[in-house]
Amino acid sequence: MNTIFIYSGQGVASHCIEHTIHLLRQKYGHLYTLVRATAEQLAEEKTPPKLYVLPGGSAITIGQDLDPAMPKIRKFIAQGSGLLAMCAGAMTASTQWQ
Image 1 (cartoon, helix red, strand yellow):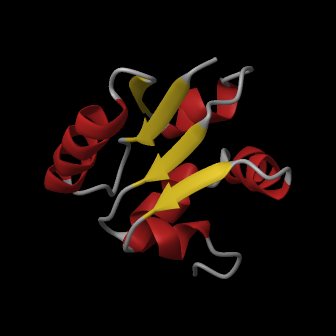
Image 2: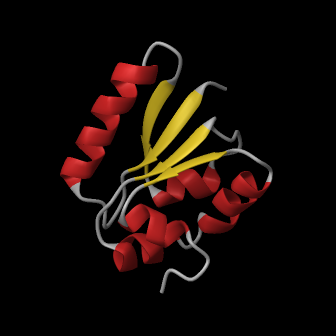
């Protein structure tokens, strides 16, 4: 599936989501479907995307909201797939975000 999941749940700053989507659409919009996804959607999704994107915002809030989806995201990354994480998103993606 040629999909990029962009986490847009609790804790993400709205301007970070909008700028991230704008940039990804400009560069990759013709190749990939960009999907805004909540933590629940990420946790329940059966088909992994080409890329997970975690924009910036509040690391604690993002981490708490994403907690159920993080094992899936970490497994995806461990298998050699992609993660684009910025600012608080990068802090959340680390193993010691708290």
